[in-house]
Amino acid sequence: MASPIAPGKSSIEVEQKFRLPEPDVLLAKLLAAGATEIAIEYHADTYYRHPSRDFAQTREALRIRRITRSVTESSSATNESAQSPETRVTYKGPYSTTGVKARPELEWRLDPCDEDGRNMQSLFDFLGFASVMTVRKTRRSFTLAHRDRELIVTIDDAESLGTFAEVETIAADDQEIEACRDQISELAEMLDLRSPEQKSYLTMAMEFVSENVLPS
Image (cartoon, rainbow, N blue to C red; front, side, top):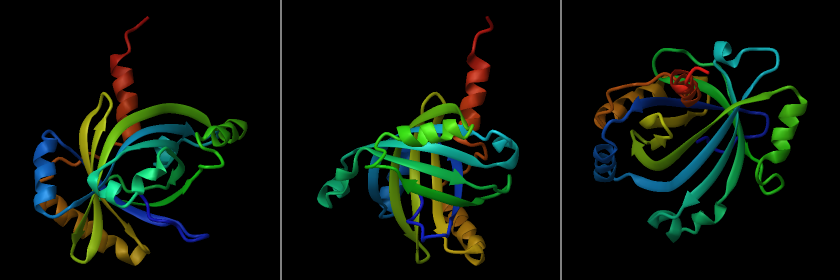
């Protein structure tokens, strides 16, 4: 969940995903720590394959995300629920395969001009980008201040894959990355998140399909 991007500049997403066997325990810890729930969202993320390079090898990602929202008490109070549905296109750049991820991210809304992302999907088709898979999940997002920085903690129920937590923030530049990584690690420890997961949802979904498709 990136912040708005200044023209000509990408944000730097810093995040860590964790396996979450007991989501209710994390929810209780978040509420006790004073976290504020932003929204409950339903994501349908369609990922695309580059025509001439392997995103799995370069550790990049390109997707169209289609979002619908449920009303929470906080969003109802501020009329934030009026943004549903929403469609975004996102590019995520390469990242290190160890530790807390830090990677450039470009993201922007397609609606209302391309409300369901169909035009962007057609553009990708014309340019040779092939859709790989659509990953669906339910996401609950919370904001929580830690050491003068706002972090976002999400609880994701990913279809067929299980439940996960993500802790993330946005670094303004390269000089902030290490501080952001430290704060994410500290908050994760405070929330007792102990099982980091380096694989993306797309990778896990593709592995799940491969393991569960019956031979013909």
